[in-house]
Amino acid sequence: MPSAHPRRREVAIGSVLIGGDNPVALQSMANTETTDVDATVAQIGRMAELGCDLARVSVPDKRSAEALRAIKPGISIPLIADIHFNPELALAAIEAGADKVRLNPGNISTRERIAPVAKELARRQIPVRVGVNAASISHDLKQLHRENPVKAVVESAHRYVEILQGFGVRDIVVALKSSDVLNTIECYRRFAAESDLPLHIGITEAGPGLTGAARSAVGIGILLAEGLGDTVRASLSGDVEDEIIVCREILASLGLREAPRLVACPTCARAEFDVATMADEIRTRVMTLSKPVSVAIMGCVVNGPGEAEHADLGIISVNGKFMVYRSGKVIDKGLDQAGALSALLSELESLEAER
Ligand code: SF4
Image (cartoon, rainbow, N blue to C red; front, side, top):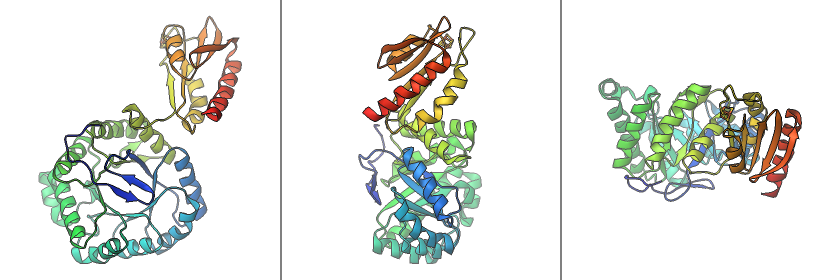
């Protein structure tokens, strides 16, 4: 997507390249206990299946840092350690094999406390995210934050980057998140105009379910449409898998990623069956497809044939009987609802296998 800002510097996070001309990487964060290695590995496995490119885990103590050593061999995507308050934990996470660490300038803020971590990052050439969060801005910027929150967040990021670069750290990613959508957008715009470092974007603490999805879509969508964002996360309270689906939908809507697509009409008095229930029944199956297959569930003949013909698979109801479409052609008709659903699911399996 075209950008008026400087081209982003390329950074490797394990096997994933971001910045430059690389595709926007999708990131999410496990919500298991990091010390529960089996649960964390299983959750990251599901995240990867859904298209997550980078997994972050919280490292609140030494045992969690040590657990990274066991988690890493069990997963297929790079592992990022989220560090707050204690620089020793960053050193332990690096030692345990983290592909990247995230530091919060709000709680590891002085040059003296950053120094040992920065030296180790530089020595091993491990990337770091400077993850500024407006809710945990460093003490000396609090007054400025009250007067001008955007300036305070951008200033915090610049200061931290300068300290890290002073120790020779080269691979830096920056996030400037806030729970305020407009402030977040402005922070990224300003920082991006002044720096070529790659950006991790998102609306922090976006909220639960639909609220979080809507706020993330607005904030992330606007930034991506302006060509900003090299990694992306939708920070939703709730299911980690929902975070990934929301991010994927945002990226796919902007033509930045191929993803499975479920089209379903909103229904009205013309609807011949309960479209929402059927869409819900197949939603998880469609969203977990490994291939970018599109499926349309349509309530009547008004827009039904058009959407069903354009999708890879479609179902419409005409005069109480169901028709199933595949690749623009009717492949079955005169079915009842259960028969149509079962035909659709079996076509889904065969399409996924063929692609
Ligand atoms: S496709 Fe038919 S049922 Fe669905 S919203 Fe349009 S007119 Fe209503």
